[in-house]
Length: 359
Image (cartoon, rainbow, N blue to C red; front, side):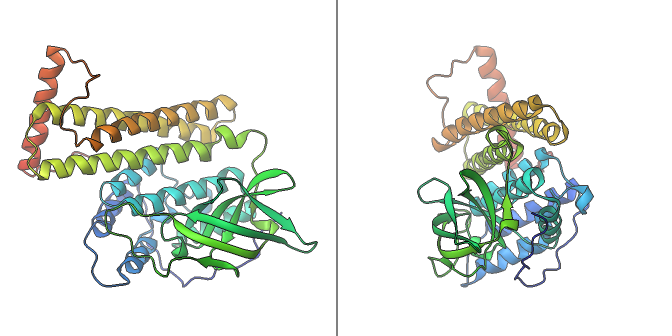
């Protein structure tokens, strides 16, 4: 397995070059506002996706050896969090792409990494998919080429991506296949991709009919690397970040609607802050796992990311009840209640006065 022989089939995108992590955060906040705005004319989604491709965000996790700035995983989580606060589809698209690139970093060949990383810097995108059955799709050899068929559900608007990363099985082993979206035999069930701004969107339904798969597109993890490997940990981390961002969006809407219970707001913001800290720690653990050689680095990253997701899911549960009152199982001392009420008042007053967020 040397280099990827197939060429990309997408228009040239003169993507911006993002030079710093702060610049990446500034760009995602602007894009989140665009994706979270009201839809108007048909085709608006395609224009937004083109804007995303040109923004340079698809290349921020590319390693420095391949021309990227290789932002920290905590920053990747912050990017997804900022996106999710305004647009669930945008957050899903970014999270799937970043995990896809991590799969290349961890399990790809030098040729695969060189090709895909260069394309990502030019605005190309990797979507992720899963079989309808939940199991890996079988790759069948006819003696000449590998063939693939079945139903998969992919990242929103996968038709506008460049590759789909799919779980497949060949020779009794579960591996990943990087399938060009425009391969012959790939059919998208829906006619268009027009996500409702800010709302969750169903996965893109894709039919694969006797699709040819090249061996050079296979990514093979070794040993038990897939179970606690960096790609899985990053996937958990970014899912946690997306849930945190959605909860932040709920808080913003509560404040916009005039939420005035300081204790409820204080408890909500404290849980958001705690989850953010856990996510940041998990991001640093993944940073260490990407460069560390010991298995313990990967185990630490996996456990930290699992904790981050658990915390984010708890915050999402609070957000689902609109954060109006402390859950029955939360016992607060008088000192804690006083501190949380004060914190809530500070948050409410800052929102009313239009104070800038402290980044």
